[in-house]
Length: 210
Image (cartoon, rainbow, N blue to C red):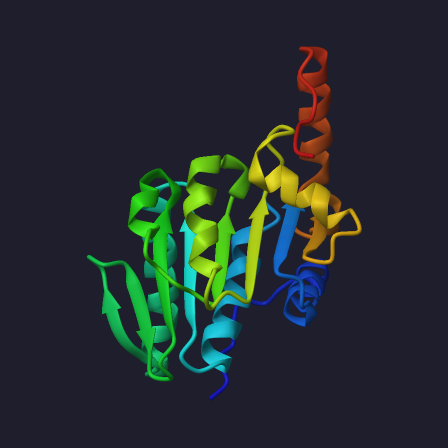
């Protein structure tokens, strides 16, 4: 069965292809606001769980409400394809007929992640998640783990996401760094970005929409 995901623009497709073809254990995607980073993560996530049997995946968002939104959106897009075996809104997981399962969790309640053992980890807006959460997320890959993909807009020069970005640009073979700029999004209103930059720079605020 072929499941069509959201149509990606060229740079998004390049990033998805790079992730799927990479054997690096940790992949950091640093991209601008409104680059649809979540869409990229969701496309890779669904490719993994639908094309590999008995896969366990973990999707982590900064807040609980966002994790519920992502789970409900994916379920609503897949339910008519008759590939969903179980959908548990209280335990926050979707199970598929091929034995694969996705767990949805939030960094604000990272204790619910403890004890999970998964093949793939996806971290949405990773720069806005606490290092304490990462210390719980990373061990979920100790036994089965194949790859962790983290995506975010930049948020300071500290934390596990920043470290992963730096390692991805080094000679470390475990890490891959990917970058997406707002100018590569054909739907982005570039005149609005430039106007915002001018406005904020006049007030001494820098780094708008980078």
